[in-house]
Length: 160
Image 1 (tube, rainbow, N blue to C red):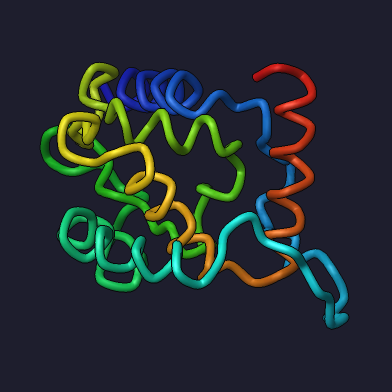
Image 2 (cartoon, rainbow, N blue to C red):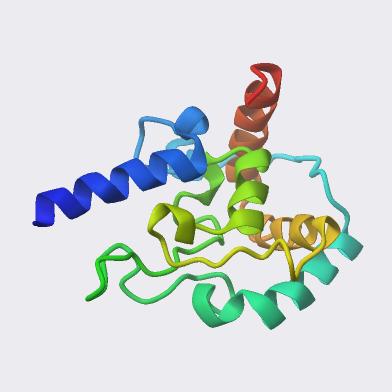
């Protein structure tokens, strides 16, 4: 039974996130790189991230935590076999996924794939969804964001 749940979780995760951007290392780029200061240009501005903070607190924090830290024990399935909400603050896997996949997951949720996240398409506008992404990405260190930006650009070039 446990092996079946694990296989289902892996299949759902691959479907939801489009594993195209995942890196083989379990460490983040920030953990892999030397601590060199870097300047990274982000796609959003402070105003968009501030709007995302507001939208996140009203709609997402109940599951993902006030600071996007994720649910306790987010890596272990609950009694229903579903995994709790993961961190979005750069300490889990959100940075492995292109912008389009992040938007799609928020817009359509994961319930149709056996997950717990509801679809937000009827409650949040496209701008709100993008603002939420801006807000949680604002918590990512520059090295992590830079690795995500490279992966996202490659995903866009490949048409994913």
